[in-house]
Length: 316
Length: 283
Image 1 (tube, each protein chain N blue to C red):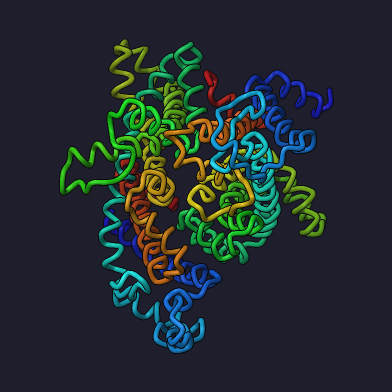
Image 2 (tube, rainbow over the protein chains, first blue to last red; image 1 turned 90 degrees about the horizontal axis):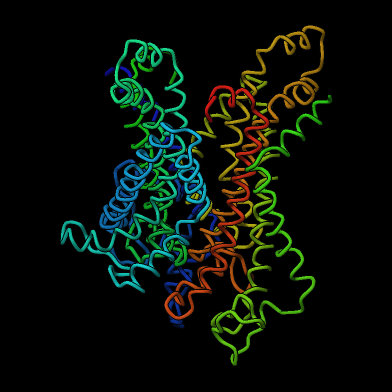
């Protein structure tokens, strides 16, 4: 098991370094001159001096090397406009995005798994058809449209919760919950629909297997069969899916953050792209990518833990 | 009976396929025909008719500049659907070419799959955002960015189909009698991977429309005055309280179109992949 984990971490390192280089390349081909924004309407300042001060006069490769070298020392550089280091700027944003993604994932799991199980137990019933129909609508609705509908109903018409904004969970849990409930519902619902569909087909597959027939033949109660035999096996594929969904939620949070004005990492990336604050864009993208790689790592380890074939077999 | 006839018969009997096609046809009719048959200018600003609720003159109402929302949703739909189509075609061509050569030449495979892994490790929407910015936020830029972001998925799916096909006896036979590799790839391997590819690309069309809407919604994608479903919705966000219809119409347009592609994808999967159907007898 430990060997498997070490191997898995070692594989992650080159991927992370290549992701870092990819991020630098993509961000640095964005056309836009941060120096021109710093200069603004100042007629005395010389744009070349500003560019030299910002290190923008050096060649692409020099800048890449410099960034990469500092990155290995844990230094992400300074923001052009925020007057602080990139690390400081990101540090307060990452927990916000994490809390949104986690809340949305909870919605997805709490709604999706029971619905999927119920649908699978009575396949092709009216209930099953209804659940699958709603879940199809769920995967087809963009989170920002669902968010707007929820905002209209619960914040504007019923005035139950604030329509936008954010309170850190550490300051005031109640305030956080009030602010996060609509974004989490809007962002998590589509994924819950996906989980429900997966859970249903995974359950159906397991329920058709021989060992379920055997258990029934032995006269075990249907409830025990479902809980003890079917669910355990049906959860395996769902586990991987949940990990992938969490990664997806972390990477796509910027749209929900933008709609509900949540000051998360995604929002920071969007505003920094607009201002050409490249060090911040690079740093924030890197953090999100690292978080996703980390989630994938945890899922693989969990999977190996649950399914011994993975850690002994040649399969990744 | 010929296999194409059987295939068409099965398609016609497939309920979700039919519903999907009907919805898509309706959306296409509005998006393609409305701009041709009406002379309402989607960009014409009229300050005397700002934020009108839907009436017989403006069936979707008007926005904060007094522009006719029906005309804007129709024209915006052209942009959104065109981007969806371009991304679908782009990922198909690129994805198939890369996957075919990677699946056939093993040396090429190792390098390509490493690059794909790196691209996959990166959140596709964020990659698309950064690339869209790199292409100066143009409409073509959005298409190229989404194509780059989504090609790895196609490569992965097609490649794994190819890896199975590669081991089949008829490929061995073709090699043994000296058929040229390029001929084997296109004539013998590609047709086997087609069902998987068609289903994948139908779902990808839906993804691409959602993704375009998302990145235009946050203001990085398609830029005004060009309309797309994403940026019409983005403009409407601040009007939610006073003019909710400005939000509902573009939102439902996105939802219906994506739903149509998902239904068609589900239908195609059932028809093209009988094995899966057999596996889930109750499905």
